[in-house]
Image 1 (cartoon, one colour):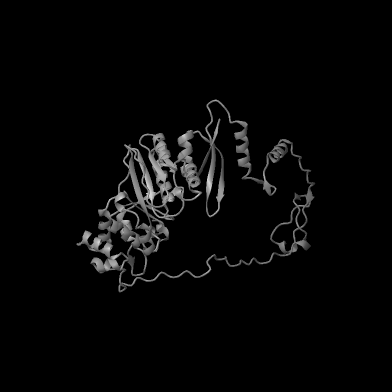
Image 2 (tube, helix red, strand yellow; image 1 turned 135 degrees about the vertical axis):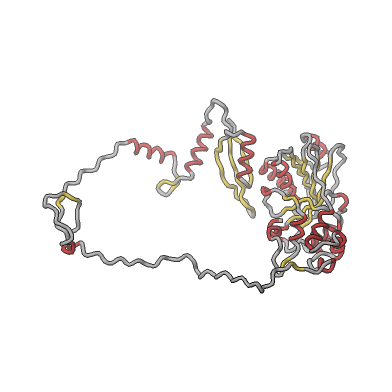
Length: 419
């Protein structure tokens, strides 16, 4: 029997991989947490698939026993195998019978009890009873008030006032001026106004403009080379790993290729992610190595290449589709965002990926870039946890996340928290 090691962020995904690769009768030998500096801990699972008609090898048995004993304490310390042997010996030894208690005569009841009960016979045998001097009348029971957990009185719900004006969406001014107050650039506001001139509200107009530009996705059954390009720090690698994880979970063959040589830890990071999510990985620091990696991939696979920041073009690969997506950080300052994305030609991309939407105060700058470049938004990515996967963009959700109510709340709080 051989054991296999799995590492990831989500136990549900890990156990699904164990069942898929080792079968439903797989044995979980050990689980533990792997701490990381500045990031959430990873989960390590050691699993084994027992062969028919054979027992567990001694090493696996020892790991199972040690893992179970680590969760039990005995006399204030972790339980060991020696403690188990001592406890078993004690259970097997015959217990000594307690010495019989000699019968005692029941004394007379206290004076305060006279008149309520009949004195028992002098030869009656009973359990010891306190003497009259040691049994004064019991004091009255005084119940203390029940403690309260609340530290303050609960606030009363405000009464409904029909005269209170209902919340209204701001801005309410139609056309380009109203869209400008939402934070869109003048060019993006003109595109939205012309896309839906008869829209009843700004949200519907922005939704129509975003839906007008569609993103392209890899075709099922065809081998595809997938890259996410952008400026340094735009969240390219994290979004690429999430996309690869969702591809593998959907049952489609996937491969990771480490090709970012702009910093020393780039290839190591890709291989660590590949081990965590269970996807094979290869290094390709030249066009020749990339061609060899593509040739080794199974037919119809999605090959996710982590490329250096900036513009990148693949070598000639006949019969292989290339889907390049542009990473647009939603939390960057509008001026910095426009400056960093200026070198990229939007005509060469299959769509955009909005990143870091969870820490963005407004989606308007990123959406302005998308509208003016005629890019369709393909995916949303935020945070650093690749186990969450990537999210497909929805124009309605994105449009409602731009406008605010009169109380300065987002019309879709979930978008700002997780987009």
